[in-house]
Length: 133
Ligand code: ZN
Image (cartoon, rainbow, N blue to C red):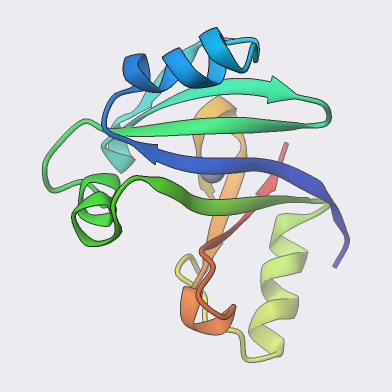
């Protein structure tokens, strides 16, 4: 499998509007818009920087994965996403190596990217997302 770059950092926030105050107003990152992914009960907001992006994640429901994450661990970096050349190939290779996956096959994330998460138990505690765009 070929990992091309760090695609984005996923950061759990209570409010995208609050988050913007630091990431955009203070740090000066360009805000390029937000998108709600209903299936994940999350609103995402993107701030490209260099070859990567900061992705803020705000839960749209108290039982969404981001709300649960914040309940348990508080706000902050929630996942690291790596862009791969071919996500199906990458998942097959990881499965072959016995790596525990959250997503057995890719689903569609924000921006229409194909994404899949690896289980933090397999990565030393880091929620790793693979994405292909
Ligand atoms: Zn992500």
